Length: 344
Image 1 (tube, rainbow, N blue to C red):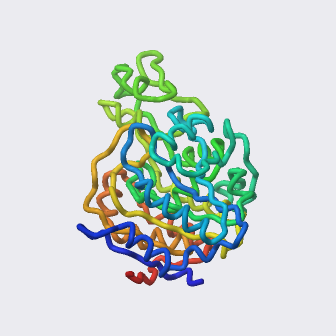
Image 2: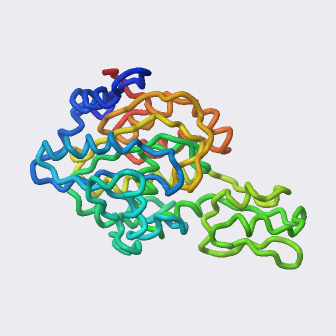
Image 3: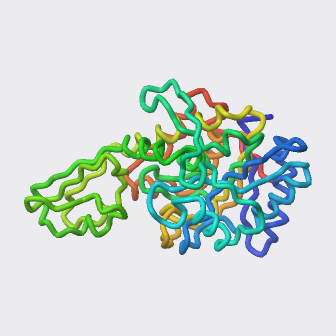
């Protein structure tokens, strides 16, 4: 098992991409992580309801069939969201999975019906000493991490590290990671318009004494209110700290598996500038690139980031996406920041 190598198939016009995907699965041997009888977590993002930018379901259906051919027992899985959209509990999340075309396989909400099915894992990192890993991932025998590569407003780019680090943990651990990012208010510039309060899903910003106050310990420090403010009062700083949090959480999830029981598939297609988490679609960054396969979150993200215009995303989101890759490497996770890429 070579953690420094990533396999790749190019997205070609007028080609049968399902056939190319099947060939990638065979040539990369990513399904070798599965043994007969394994409960196999297919960790993916089914897309928020209303947002069309997610992995085409027929690819995942093909993967499910191939896992069954290996004798595995696959289930689709993701965690509940911290914010109140159509994936914030197990019931709605399952409904969204079905509505978005993933009803052909069992969907298990990885952290339970309301997000309480979690297992604490010590990290040894002072930044986040403990991560709550989703219980279904903790109990799975093997895992295939299926990721849509796209932009992210705090991490710059979301890849496999984002998929595991944020998508594989509890609501509490999601909040802890987000609050690594700093929020600063220049209240002297505030005109008390209330745009921030209207934009926030939770209504955390409030106007007091003719200026904004944001002091809730449940605030995620996401950039939604900042983007809505016409006067630039709300300033999000040190976004790279979230990237470090993602790396810490990713390692915590991986520590619950044997290294030889995890594989990755990254789809660098429909390259939206914002993640799949909102109910609306975002601008497309550029042309479809292709599909990557490998055995290291570090290597597959390094290969994927290098294949797209990550500098534009970093500039757009005022962050450095590579910090998540660098920090994961510093934690001793197998892989390379400059992986060998073998096209198939």
